[in-house]
Length: 577
Image 1 (cartoon, helix red, strand yellow):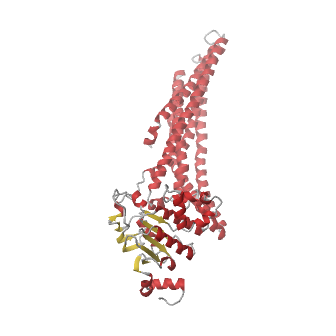
Image 2 (cartoon, helix red, strand yellow):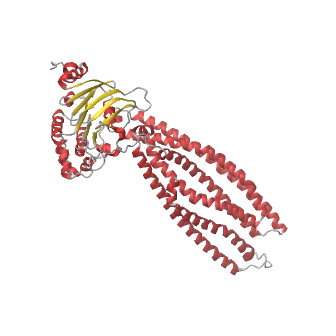
Image 3 (spheres, one colour):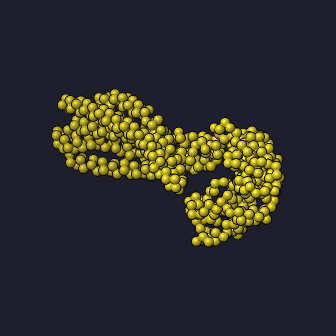
């Protein structure tokens, strides 16, 4: 945080100086009012004869001081906002870059909802915290100290009365602050929960409606909302007790000052103007303490948010970035050597003792039952996760030794879940290669068998895709994702069940066109359908995280019972050739 703050410290310091100027203007005015009352109106030092000219002169001076104080306050707002907005703008960018470097286990652990809350609500709270510290805290401290100082100058007894009560006020505020901070932490965590539910419910609204589960989701959201309301009520209850306690104490102080002041006036040791000034200083002190109460609310929330943002800033990616960048193009040889892997928090290995070699330019397929580890295996090649034991080699070099950006630049990956963005169709395809020309975009779409439906869109390739591709069918979304992979033209291409929504004819045309477009690439196809893998050079059968068999389509039909069962379930009980 300090690295961010010091970049804009000059704004904050200048804002603080302006606030000191505003407070100083406020502190001078009660003394001038004393002169107006005692000398201008009552004529205490002139035998009871007032002085109208003195009243006018000091009145003009007070108006001038008010104008100067107002200007100081206005420019203070400008510089404080410059500091707080710039600091939090940079903080938001840094947090975003951090999140982009998180590994998948870290993203899974934090969750999407909590990350969104921290990037929005928590950073907004920090922005308010900075403003309060520079504006509110400076004003409160200087007003408090200044009021006490001028009270001593007016009458030592007045100053001692206020000073004696100050430790008690500070103790009360400290007690409430101690009680409030953990509740603010809890409230932000509950806000995480609400954001997670909202994201889940809105993204899955079609399933919720199709299954008629609206009432169930309303209950879940209602329970989460009730929890945060209960926490907010507990916080407001604490604040509800702060104001009366402080007001009672300050009322007692005002009464004591009036009592002593009236006795001093009667004894001739104090003037009415001095009593008025004392009351004014005491009122300013009261307002500063009340402001301090409001500040503590913002500071408590700000501290809680800083702690939560610090979790992001202090988090280091569990994926260590290598430095190796080969001097020549990759061939695409992939080797798994005794690879085992389990997801964080799962004691059971998802992959167990995987040994396999994929040769350059070879097309291999991975097939198996749901949950057998197919997507996990391909995800390790792109280093979404790191192996638990063993190693994966690309052209003879451990994946962990490669520079991560280079490694992922050499692998084109179509995930099982299609992800599209709210930009044009052409720009969605260009995610695979941002510098691709329009002709290259069109060629990739033709290979992916997507050019036909794209041309029928209202604006063709410039048609903007709706959020998450909701304006497209499942097969259309898959073809755009495939085109994005094709245009990358990488040495290694992975298709993780990416053609499941395509009909057999379209799928066959795609693989034929892909073979002609980039015949030298190493291709890995993950699929559930026999028809998708039948033409692969080799097929690997995954069963419960282990490689149960490998071979060509014909070899496996003859020798592998698992493959035969899959074949029968999809093709029927026809004779296995």
